[in-house]
Image 1 (spheres, rainbow, N blue to C red):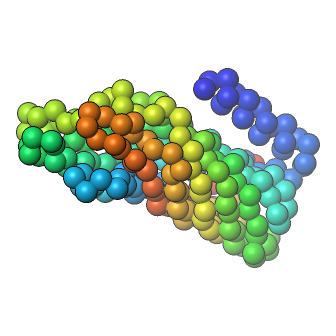
Image 2 (image 1 turned 120 degrees about the vertical axis):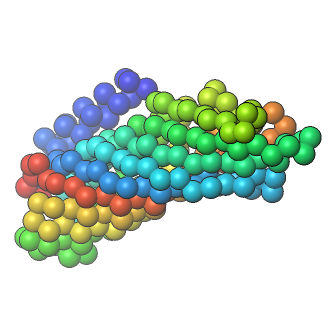
Length: 204
């Protein structure tokens, strides 16, 4: 994973040098998520978290926008086990996310830009924690999380001079949690994300 991240960062730099129209910035914000599952015996609860990272844009009105983001998310399950006992588990997950977005500027003036963006996201779990409640151990363990996951991201954003605001939705294609015990988990970690950012350099 480290090699992959280094390759992506190198591509960021090389792409900016090659195309000339290059913007680099810092962003941070809030994300709300839900570990959605189709199991009727499992009740999912919403989680709150945050994200922080860097963004780049290469191009003019139509542009390529790779990013490198650390995302901290959470959630909880209430499980109806096979013996009729209810257990509750709370999860926290930290992931290194690499969105590879294509964007278009609907409004593209010198002081105001309105953007729409869409693209895939490679997500790598770098830390996770499982907490059990009521002195009962649920079916999910720390080792139950898949390390690599794929998502798709769509959203819109506004730039006012050097300040950026983004609102995005992220849908997971792959299951975050593997099958555990007698549960056939198909768990997708879907996000709503709101970010505030600042352009550090750029000539778009």
